[in-house]
Length: 165
View (cartoon, rainbow, N blue to C red):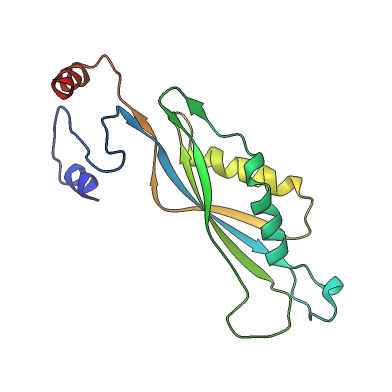
């Protein structure tokens, strides 16, 4: 938030050092795509589950296959992803198949990967499930792209020398 605030206020600099995150000097960082998956099934009484489509079960099928997605790699960083949350139904007991479920997936990207590419991968994965439920994917904030500074940039070379000393 602080870096964005400086940029929004028009601050200009030749270089900066970001001290959060890796606890060691790096010249790049993964991006963040916070993906929200909304799963819509069909409610039915729990005594007749065949009359409905359980959104929680279909969402769980998606989550179980997330590791099938190919994630980007490069020499300085690797894309990752993890499920941050899964919700369906309500806290109140009732015997109804949940019609809605929601999953939040944190996806780290490498340079040249976009949030739209991550959404496309997840949509294709959902399509491959041949589910009767519907899946809708969106990007929630915060979103930021991956970045990498040229290792031959003068600031990087000077900082590396000072750090080594």
